[in-house]
Image (cartoon, rainbow, N blue to C red):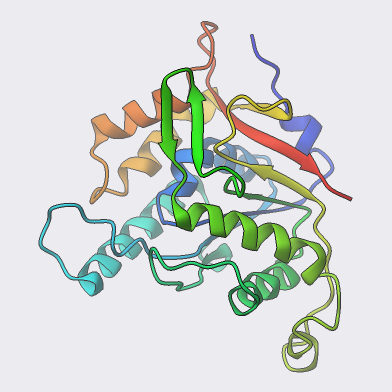
Length: 247
């Protein structure tokens, strides 16, 4: 049986932020962990960089129509996981066009200074090709890579240093904040990998994924959850992260 690192990582943390590129990423990669944190009484924030409004393969639908569909679906999914509307953020970047640069970073710095998280969870910022296991690989979406970079840089040092985006202090009344602890998704064979037991939250994870009905039906939602959380023969289910303390 794998180790459950939930208490080790989160016991001394009260404010946890998740930042993902597209509306269904949070549910697929970390839905069980989000639900467990909410159940534990933690203050949980979830931000989506885009509305995933280009995520249509064959269907004839406009970007505006798909934006409206995916926004409605995501509201439902966040409700399943227990995220309050005021803790659910949409940063309105263009789908497929996220770039890691100074201007893009400002929104994330603002959000971190506003929410003051003790730890941030986001995408793998390093690998172009994700190696899941021998013979199983996929492309790390450009939006995912750039989101991971933006979040990491925003957490340190940009949110800390007051000469970056001083309008946050002068106009918005925010304060400096430093993030030095991260969990990254989409790492599978890394020495810093930790596992979070989400057995009791599995149904909520599946229901949250299936709320994105333009992307997943119930069967595919279960298949996705099974693929990412069946890590041993114990009958337990886990979500995996790379845990980094970068002080």
